[in-house]
Image (cartoon, rainbow, N blue to C red; front, side, top):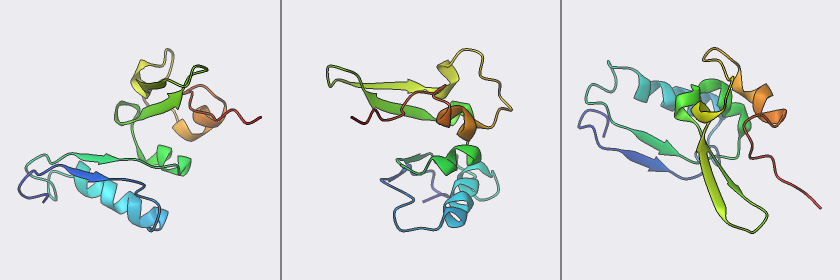
Length: 103
């Protein structure tokens, strides 16, 4: 798959894998050595700990608005978010959106 440049789509990548294994898989797709043809990886996850393994240009937040419509936005679209910022604390603080409203 990686050598041929075939895109991979993995729903809930963290569902059955340890976070360290997921981090390793992400690194395979970033490395020119292991991914010489530039294959892309599309994943969904509810594990916000993965945010610190990703760059803001790689993250898209999916959330529902008050009317129930689904909205998608990229972390790169968040104003004032620096490239070297740890994204997990920013997400938990609500800066990226996507925090569920309970009750």
